[in-house]
Length: 91
Image (tube, rainbow, N blue to C red):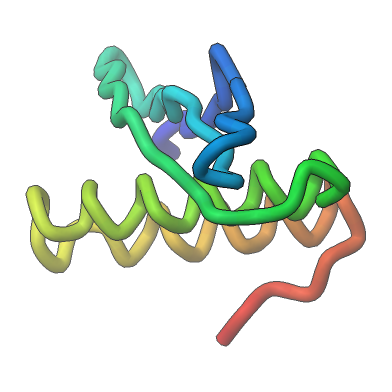
């Protein structure tokens, strides 16, 4: 079984543009890949919602780069979000 995790780092808010910016880091086995991503959302958005949105955007970029091999990561991420935050996975 492969070990997989995702991390949101250096989260900032651009008040002029009303968007969050962060680096999303995927750790899988010995691989670590970082994606700088942005998410338009109000400052009052919950950390969970912002984190999830940033990870969804980073996964989309990663999927474009890796092709169909991202499918197992999407499943693991959805399960992790569901377990950790009580948010239903998007199907």
